[in-house]
Amino acid sequence: MTLIIVAPILAVALFLVDSAYANDERFVIYGAVFLGAGAYWMINIGRRMRAMDGWELLRSDPRPPVVYLRPFQEDERRRYHDPVGDRQGGERGGTNSYTQATREPKIARQITRIGPFVAVGKPGDSLAPLGAARIYVSDDEWQETVTSLVRRAAAVVLQPEASPGTFWEVDLVGHVVDMRRVLLLVPDPVLRPLGFARVRELIAQALSVSLPLPGEGVACDAFMFDELGRPLPIVFKSSKALKPFVQQVLLVNGKREGAA
Amino acid sequence: MNDSEGFVEQMRAQTDRGSLWSDIKWGALVLALAALGTWFLVVGDPSSYVGSRLMGAGMLVGAAIGAFFIVRGAVRRRSPAGHPLNLQFAAYGEADAVAQDIEADFQGRRFVARRVQVGRRWLCYAGKGQITVQRLDRLVWVYTERVKHRINMFIPYRPASYQLLLWDHNGRGAAVPVRKRGAPPALAALQNAVPWLFIGYSETLKESWNADRPEFISLVESRRQQALSRQSAS
Image (cartoon, rainbow over all chains, first blue to last red; front, side):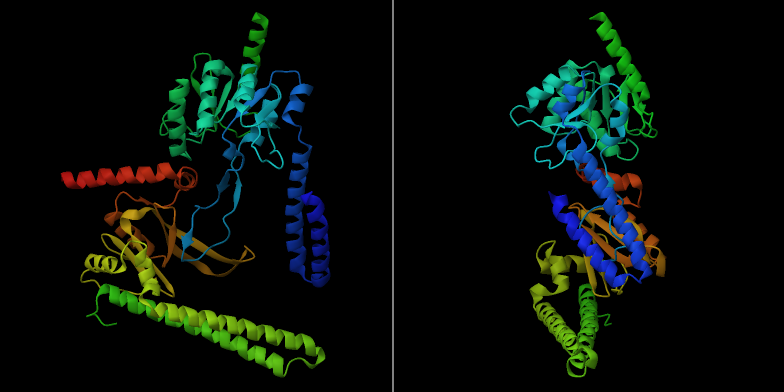
């Protein structure tokens, strides 16, 4: 609906500005940058509009799902170029640019080799974010839905945080899921040692898993666990970064199905 | 500057001078706008009578609004509660008590305008219309920032300038202009006065500040407790 209103207004505005400054070279550069950014924004919105609903995806793909458990604020968390905060005095070199901090789109393509990638959607989303297909449930039934999904999941992507909801999810995973099928997303221990230490403590309490100390470990984005429960760091550098995890999960699930 | 005046009085005098200079600059701009508006209104462009008059009227209205804000600012600064220095002091409690504490901290030192002054408990700066007063034990992170001045993000129009960025435990920052050569001594003075501070910039500190601020502030607090216990032990 927003697009239907905004697009014609934008087009008329661009036409008017173009008519007024058609001879100015700068306008061509600014126009190209502006239109490029606009096009990127529109394509992104288009992809989000086309994204399949979680329930629909589960119906269309018979494989056991991969469930993504994270705090809702992770969907909107931003990574700023400069320190953030109210500033008084001095000069500003420019605006504080940012990128989305979530690693969900990065892992989505690789993880769907295991099964349909789903997550509980944040209440109030106007459009589902890119990555896992969203399942929207009411406040009083989300725990029941998550329990049911996790019990039949092929794998779980877990991003723990110190919030009651996420803590409950971590506890659930600790009781229900084989750790070889868990991908643990963590703050980079080199870039965010304090955030990593918080998550490390939480994981030690809830899953009885000991991650390396922030100063001891290498830079990484996630951990997978081997058959002895040892954490193996993963860096999301290449498009095949999750291959060992995907192979391990397929192997474990194949054995599980064979035994059944 | 009268050396017999106390540190705070010298800083107050510099603040008043800075405010006056700022008023003169803005006043000159308002006068220029008013003069240009009057010219457009009275003489104007004969080929576009209505457009010229409208522009002139707009400029005069702009000048009147500008004059109103300049006068209002000047009137506010005359009252003790509205003085920029007292407003800075008020952030730390009763203004007179804060002024006395700063005076005691900089006992015997002369205030130098446009230079960061670091005492044992306070940091003061006054110059070019900016006044910054910071209590050192509230600071958590300090570093030097290089500001590039560019047109359209590419074309430099003047050399880069430098400023000290002082972040406090409430997440508020103060940027204080410094010269390139003046930054290291100021940081060294801060390191000496507040050894538990994080000094210098790194991606790790930036990410921790942005994403894990409660832990960042707790860490500074624990460093402070350790430093104080070491001091009391020795």
